[in-house]
Length: 205
Image (tube, rainbow, N blue to C red; front, side, top):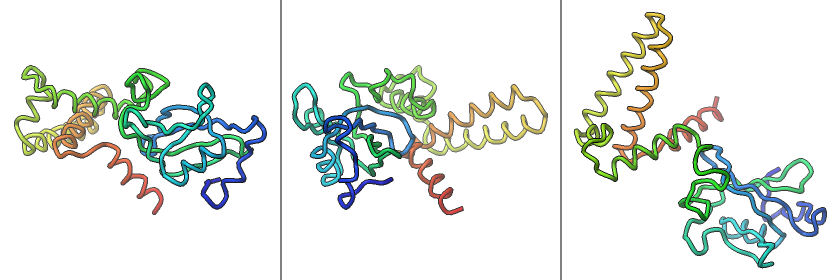
């Protein structure tokens, strides 16, 4: 059930002495970012400000995620489970969620969706300006060259498919996905924006 300012009182805070576990999940790619606890005041603040607030059991006080780092969690929606004693926050992170600088509190990044991690690597290569990097070299050749590579890889995928060479098809498909991500990066776009389009299409079909 989605929780709003109109029905937040339905959450069962009494079961755990005024607290419920709250999971923050990336609204675009589904990655689990962190887990905290909320009391009724934290939930009310979250719903009011559309940013994630939690209750600190050690400090016994409310805290806004990112209040010192600036890496706030922009809350898109809040949901409760069937027993109404836990919360799921669909969020868009404004930077790394973990205080150690990782995207997720649950790992150093190994659990992140592979394509998202690959796009992050492409961004890093682009920013580093390493002339030995193939990614950087390709981006330096301009958008037309990157687009050409996507076209070439698409043809190679099609050819591999019709020749019934599964290994070649897999490798060419990997090349196509990589070059498509480079193209998105060159245009300043993110994979999440593509996923959002797919999600919208799924809703409308």
